[in-house]
Image (tube, rainbow, N blue to C red):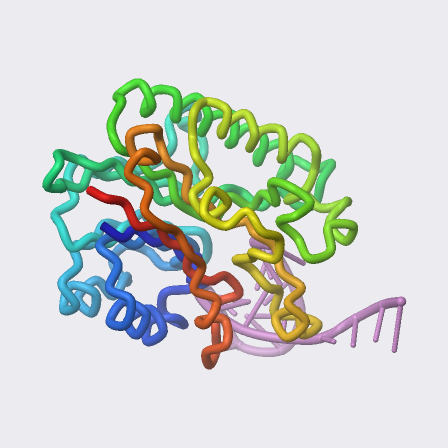
Length: 260
DNA sequence: ATGGCGCGTCAAACGCGA
């Protein structure tokens, strides 16, 4: 079973690319971030025509997450618990039935947090704390679980071509990295890193300054596996080729193959 | 060495991202 995550930076702008990717790679589940669309305007029919069930949590203009699955999506939950005043559409979770039982999947769009020293960075750290708390609850269910998405965190120096260029950035702050480590240390496996220990593995290249041509990338999109998913890990990969497509997203799909 | 973009909103710049 193949589960992918992709920050598509606007579903309207990326619809043809997304459909092409799904036709070509055919993941069983794909998590989208930054759909930048309200639920009513999400082009669900186009994805349903490819055999996907669709669950979205959108808002006007920015943010917005979705889960698409060939198998039915049950118990769809919107919003990350812990702050009723948080209006950002950044979290959706659902259960997918599989032959071995059930798999839980979340599509996560973690706050960017820039610039540091502002309420945006405070919001990022608070959001990460809420995520870690909710993750503990999910782990206690002891089922295969994949927390997939754009974490907006560069975990280690090896996750950036030029780590020194990110020292003042919210994605690479010690607090951001510590919060990510704390989440991992609850018992998750970083699927792409597990399968690809080598440096030079990136999921994002800025639109500016020819970043992709220079391979000046960072690894900020992650699939975190619960122990019950990690023991079924077959392979993981990053589909960099979409970054070379016409009008690309600045992020590329990351995927994991689980023996489920 | 440095900086170079793109999407959505809304109809000209601007917020936002990373």
